[in-house]
Amino acid sequence: QVHLVESGGGLVQAGGSLRLSCAASWLTFSEYAVGWFRQAPGKEREFVVASERSGDITSYAHSVRGRFTISRDNAQNTVYLQMNSLNPEDTAVYYCAAAIFLRDISIATEYDYWGQGTQVTVSV
Image 1 (cartoon, one colour):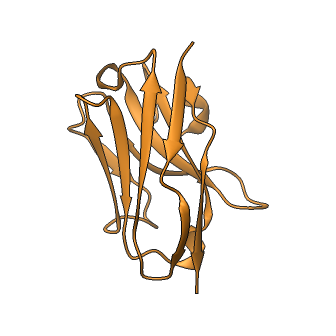
Image 2 (cartoon, helix red, strand yellow; image 1 turned 30 degrees about the vertical axis):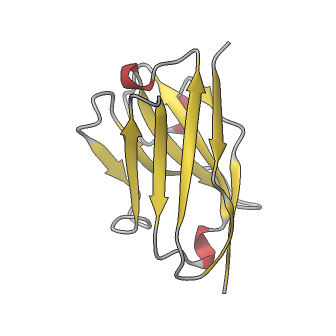
C-alpha cells in the first residue's frame, strides 16, 4: 500500500525557514508528478507548488513564489519543500501528494495519493 509521510513541520518565528520532507513507500517519485498543498483552519486546501514527473517543470502559487522551493532526491525517493521568509499567513497543515497523470497541476482532486500532513506554525 502506498504511503506518503511528511515531516519537518514545527513552530518558527516570522522570517524563519523550514524544510519539509515527503518520503514515499511503494511509490517511486520519479514516476509521478508531486505537489504540496496546505490547509489553514477554516479554509479550503490550497495549492502551494508542484513538480511534474521529470522535475523540469514546476509551478508555484503566487503567494509563495520566490520564497518556497520544491526539490526531489530520487536516490532517497524523497521530495522536499524549502520554505524561507515564512510569515504567519503560511501557518497551515502541509500535505504532499502524488499523481501519475495531471491535467491541472494545481487541482487537488487530480492527485492520487496523499500524506497525512505536517503542521507548520509561524509566529509573529
